[in-house]
Image 1: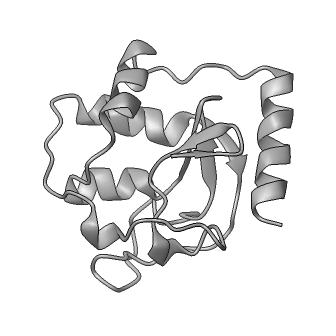
Image 2 (image 1 turned 90 degrees about the vertical axis):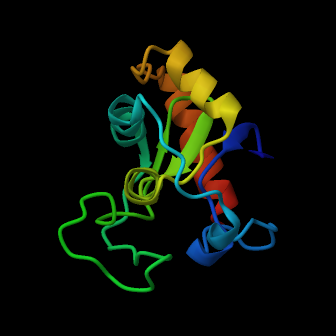
Image 3 (image 1 turned 45 degrees about the vertical axis):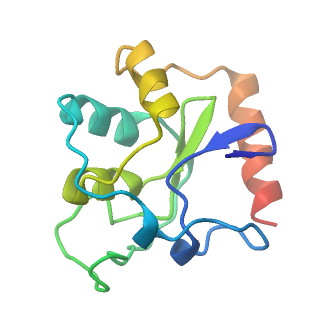
Length: 137
């Protein structure tokens, strides 16, 4: 899904990220997808540029509870981007813990980057900051 010039992935209705946008339910996302390259995909998800940093923990939406000791849930509402895609920090948790499926074109993009998030230009960072301010306004 594209939103104001960026492709978004890993946003679900239950997270409450965007108002007025019809997002899928996390309960409808395909679970138990096993990736041979999971450690490298996970690293990409957690090490890409931080668009926003939110100092609050996310609840595990599938278990319905807060879980201590899960680093991806600390700051879960925070956002990452590689300049093309934007995703919430806690997406890495759901991919690791539950095997939550990622769109094929996003996985192809990560693999084409050789699992290394690109260094964003100043202009890309500014566009992402403006995007975040606009969609969360």
